[in-house]
Length: 260
Image 1 (cartoon, rainbow, N blue to C red):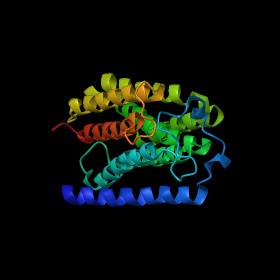
Image 2: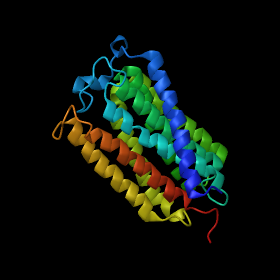
Image 3: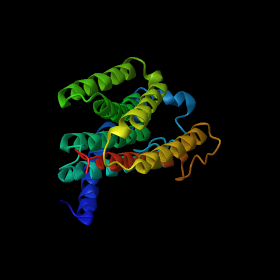
Image 4: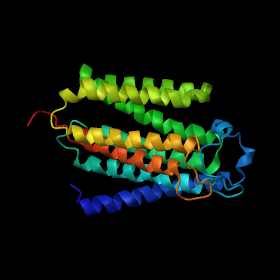
């Protein structure tokens, strides 16, 4: 079992490795992002932050804040060594952590480039995590095997990614549907069947997501906007989203394989 200080240090080290990988991708592909097809969000100005044309990171605040997901994802993955006796076993812990890392790296690629391929990478991670949350709830409610759950996860995530590929303009409402479905399934159906969980942790994650969404709206609509500042509502959305993922994991890791 990792000591908390060791766990935190290794998580930061792993996050640094993933962040370096993302930076390497950007250096290899940029910085002339205008040569790539633009993100569809450019039709509605892609949030408040003013793009720094000609720079490697077009939206530096939104890019750097995305690393919150990478740090949380690394922390989750490393916690797999402590998964003995938990319902959320090693494989599921690793998958949930990887999903968070993919969200962070994808968000880096979107906000650094504002390209269509960056947007695709950004949304893929959200679909992967949302599909995991739905599948993990259904597995508990239906009592299905790991193999069946794996098939459900691949099918659900694959369908979402396919829709993202052929109809990228549907990405926001589809993610909202996935997230709301996951929350509803977990709270009303799966939660009563999970011995050992602490429901306030789930609610804390829900609160973080709610505040994050409010800030997302204020930023997207430019009701609150300082375009050339490092203080960005969308950056806060990223950090609160990472907090929500951490709270969800803390909630899931409390479930034991049998009642105490």
